[in-house]
Amino acid sequence: MAALARTTVVIGIGNEFRRDDGVGWAAVALLGVRAGRRALPAGTALVRSDGDPGRLIELWENTALAVVVDACFPSSVRPGRTHRWSGGAEDGPLRPAGPARHSTHGLGLAEALHLGDSLGRGPGRLVVYAVEGADRSLGTGLTPAVARAVPLLVRRVEEDVVRYGGAAAPGRRSRAGGYAPRGASAGGP
Image (cartoon, rainbow, N blue to C red; front, side):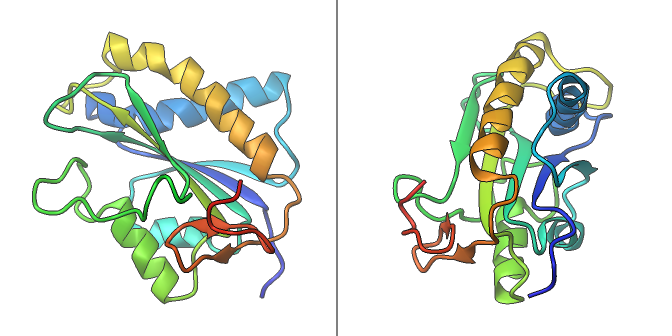
């Protein structure tokens, strides 16, 4: 395995010109501001992405931890509600959204993860935060409920980066569909 240029990457997926779809970018921006006051572990990169599967794979390849933040738009929405998926036994595998997509991207995160896994280019551990959005129309700025969710979301991401990131060894993909550090079971931390 190639040497790690970075051990952790936080990827904000979205489009700042589609209102709440910009929540991933907003979270990464706030993380950058907060990191100026309270440093993240060495080797942590903060990046924005449009969600293209090839670019996502390139961003998380050879990292011990990838934290992805994206908006979702379920049919029964509670704007600002945040869902966390970490691949543990309680989460189940990350599955494609299917025909009634809850994402604004042509191919979603689940498809990128499955493609990366089949190519042997997935992250060691993956944590996904999906924030329910109310508005994905053209325009800038998050709706008030989604904007209020960002500071707590950023604190949760920081906790994951500190807990699982840093100089951790690259993980391995578990057979259960989740991610586990070397020597741990899929249901472990």
